[in-house]
Length: 172
Image (tube, rainbow, N blue to C red; front, top):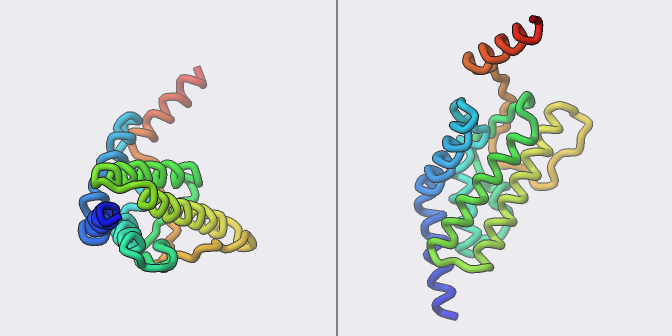
């Protein structure tokens, strides 16, 4: 029992005290995924990751309540990218955080805390995205404590050139 408590405290200490290390792992994973597509990553969660991980660490330390509802940051949502892009970002974050729990010697209780927090955040973000598009859509069940900004993107120049070439080829 004491060993399990010591491990949980170690996981909580890294999450709450060094969230930038875990966020760096997430950014590397996102960069690797984007590299396969030939474009730099366009992360919507970039400004949110460190404060969110810190709040998950506080949950691991025993603080009650939703980590997402305590996260104070700027969430930039992009309707053009849709909910699929948010799912991909949260899936990468979940993988990184669960890998960290495993590496730090955490067990099922720590994994459950991480999974619950990421699920709440993902569902809330997707609900917020839907609410931006349709003000009559229901608001998220779990509120976000930070600022939500609707972001509009221009296609990347390489992607735009690729689409132009495809359109030209289709015309011939």
